[in-house]
Length: 418
Ligand SMILES: *Cc1c(COP(=O)(O)O)cnc(C)c1O
Image 1 (cartoon, protein in one colour):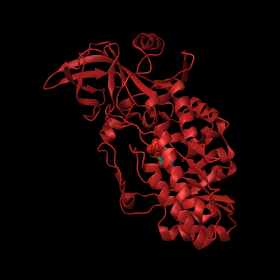
Image 2 (cartoon, helix red, strand yellow):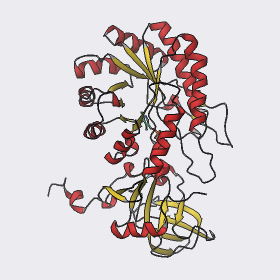
Image 3 (cartoon, protein in one colour):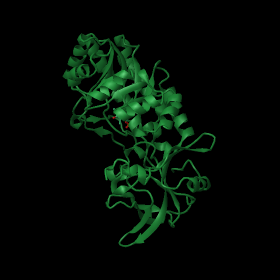
Image 4 (cartoon, helix red, strand yellow):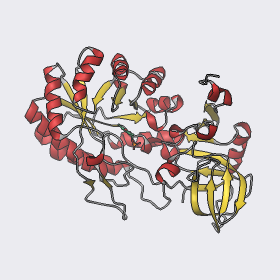
């Protein structure tokens, strides 16, 4: 049973000050979760989470996570600039981009970020872009084929298709890239891979670790390069469905530790530092999209029209994703009405829920759409002239802070030439 982290009365009070729709984030939840992650990998001195900025590119969130010891994982110019403005610079930034323009490498280098190369051709491209090759470089690996987990939990199978993914280097290329970098002066090497998204299995990180750790041992032998860090990237998921299994980050950390001791330690690589670039796991459950029911419509189906739309949360329209909905104050009423909960875009995929059983919704009810803290606001867009919402932070002391104001028509018009 998913429960909102703000109760109806408080939410009504917030909505009186900040009109719906808005995204609201739970500081206490974010901090506790970040601490659980840190504790799970405390066995690896130097372990670091670089928060995937694209998930929630909001300064208050980046700073809060920075206070918990997290760096930033950036993949664009604006993300780099935002990190810098938040005081997150140097090796606190992992720059994991793909199809990267020269100016982004230049800025990443200027900020002292650790650069993660997505392709072998970027060794030369990076050198041309910044005029030298950094002493510390990471390379992204793509094993090809299909990635499946041997073990599944409660019927959730993890399968992804690295062979169809545009990211990373082949096995042969990554060895060549290491040699090229070494010849150009790189002294510290990192290894990165991202093989599956939103995994709900404690086996994902350990399985990925096995692939990367073995590759690190082999690459060290083949190339003589000094591998000092391994980046497990993102992909640890959250249960969007109310009955989906939850990842146990302590078990995940322990699983990775076992593989580390099996593979890296015997190879004399017990000093390798681990890091990750989680986005969804860090933020998704700690964000709600709050919206109000403004219309009801009875035609061939029952519709509830809300004041948010896919521009505020694209995942249902784009991926058919499930996001749980709570009708505030009606948590204990029977879910005996079947609704499509829709926004106002002129697009029939603008539906937050289809055939969802919910309590009877009246106009004016507040709805909480759950698990929107990552890849929610950030995937927003302006179709149909819809404006981006505000973002709020529910602080640990119960107060609420505006961390991004809502967009206005003036903002929307500001790039136009009349
Ligand atoms: C998107 C992304 C992440 C974060 O992924 P999550 O699924 O949100 O954890 C991390 N690293 C890279 C390179 C990404 O593109």
